[in-house]
Image (cartoon, rainbow, N blue to C red; front, top):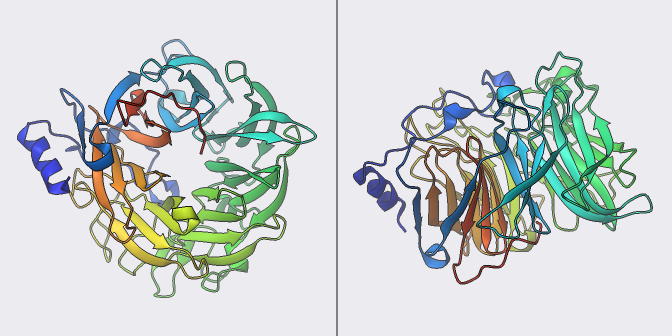
Length: 459
């Protein structure tokens, strides 16, 4: 499928979308932008736009379910989406007063998802990221959920950090513990729960903790959660200690002057590890994706980081891995496409060869028709990979499926753009693609109509 054909077909059919400029900036409130909201949604369509070739030529929308109201008269918006053992978990965002918690959907019949419960309602906060893993420690055996918690008002008495829940019975979650961020920032923006040699940990991205605490607390913590009732921070990442180009003289926890004299924003936005929990990937905005060896969790070793051309807005937002961990997918969230001295473009995807993690090599970039449509385009947000297919959420640009059989030559093979699209997250579980639409809840796409196996496996 040629991307030019996709755009022309849409316009020819008078099903215009995303023609209203997105006024919010990237996920960088210190940079002058507010939080994401409905202003990022695309135009109303009579039917969803759905196209595909190769392995995506039969995918279709099989369900679209709004979130239930947990408070009368309050409609929460969705954030990220995750799947584990036949249940989908949707975080919620700050709109309409937040406190929407995590929504749990029974996915036994993917064409008829049922919201069965919600949990992690934390006063004065919102809960956008949730990861679920099966763990087995002397203190806890079962399915553990880690949920990010951010204060709606940074100056309030609310508490930010992350919550831990027992979701062994997903329809009856039980609170186990809470880890508090005491930096003065909002709390934990994104996190990643992983298991290393049987022991569970949480990596945190506490936006601006370094900045607001004057360097006393760091954005990234590595927290031992083997006893979920008593999570313990065992390590904090300070980029000044590892990266030659970063020091107290040119970095204050947010503002960083790079080696070319360009002032850039740098903070931890997102975190993840490889499958074994041996290597951590920190999405650190204009410092790129920072790679750490965490085989000794209390004493990580810095390996390397991605970099950007002087004219590229960094904005390393999220990452994922492909090809057995030898390929790094980096998504860059840029809402403000026009900035003096930089290329004119919304955020797009970069693909790196990281066989040598001390020296990531850029192989290719992937852009959509929306990337250079200014105004009215759309930035990329989050990536997921299954096999040789990369799935990307693009807000008003919907979900894009990309063939990365040859990572140096990514090819778009599928596009799904629902009416008033505002796709935040995407998750792929066997034959189904789950998408969280901020204003419209959970969308379920079936990849192969001849395979009706329900979602089951986690990432």
